[in-house]
Length: 461
Ligand code: ADP
Ligand code: MG
Image 1 (cartoon, rainbow, N blue to C red):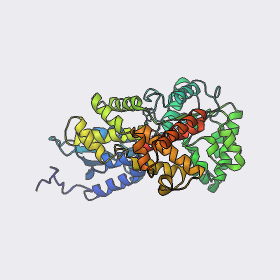
Image 2 (image 1 turned 180 degrees about the vertical axis):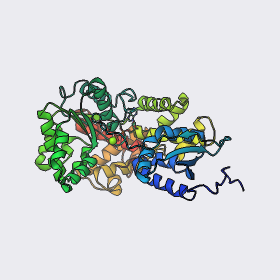
Image 3 (image 1 turned 90 degrees about the vertical axis):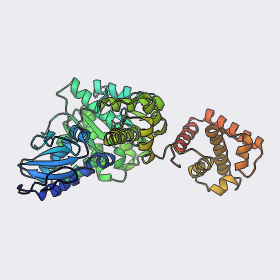
Image 4 (image 1 turned 90 degrees about the horizontal axis):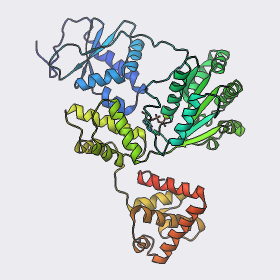
């Protein structure tokens, strides 16, 4: 009997040998849509089902670090998958390919259906205030969230938190739930995403259980409704949310909403719901600034009990600028790469990791700035550089000149050269005008800031 590449003895004669690989594939199919894509590609894709014997499914993983990581981070999903794909008592053990010892490294408990909890439903304990890094970009949102967690229903009702993808909205509402529950264990806390609420509603309609559905929500002390921008265009769901919100608020219960945009930008039925959504306190979360990005990376490393040198944290944070989620993805990839090749975490390794992960460190060049400004104002590249004299075009061109100066510190003459050889006094005038507008008009200032940030992140807009 030969030994395979990975050192596993082919175990002829075992009860269900041919099934191990297929069973594991089924399990992975179940887990895939339930975890992040990077997480799946990094940690689960490189695994293989090897042997199924006496109720233990042995999974080959690249090394022992993978075994630890999988059992720490994916055991809930894997256990749910086990219950879903097999009726038998099954456990999974991870066997590192590099292990000298052929024994089982980690033995999972037999799969059980997750216990249904009455309170704190769908809260993830690690999404806490303690693990949430506070910086300028989210300080106000965190203060409001803490205040709501301490006295639900008392101060800001509803609390509406909005911000871009991966900036920490879900983490923050989960932290509210965890903290509120820690302070008042009897409080009925329920977290759900608007898309899940929609599925639940459809089911209730189909099964004719609308009353149970309504009662369930009516009885809550704290409802955390994530991603309400999903309500756009779903009138039936809007009506239901309107109803749920009104009855909860009448009962003095707290509601927290999150969204990728402010309430007034969620077109809803007759605007009724939109005005309710924004009737309490509305706070936003911005992209994290450098210090916060460094702190987020260090926090993630500390949670994974890994050593992240300061210079490497700085190196990543200076390049990955868009969101906490992007930072987390980079960190996970770095950790995986370090473990696969047993290499220390250094700038060089970070460089390799980031190479195929982010395009954010591409230098900002003048063409990209001009193109982004043109797109932002809805004019063509030709028009902004050479074309006409309409007000809109003039403003677009002046903003582009301003951003070029601010971002690349080009000389007035250099900037003029990019716009059909405009005179340096014209450029100077343009920059002054945009500067004035920025001081006078806060809406313009915020638009300008968004545009500049988008450009430095490589998002043409
Ligand atoms: P959103 O819901 O806004 O898209 P999430 O709350 O899902 O973003 O955050 C994405 C990831 O980044 C999560 O793993 C979260 O824990 C982490 N994260 C976001 N903001 C912070 C922060 N300020 N401190 C620590 N981790 C953060
Ligand atoms: Mg979210």
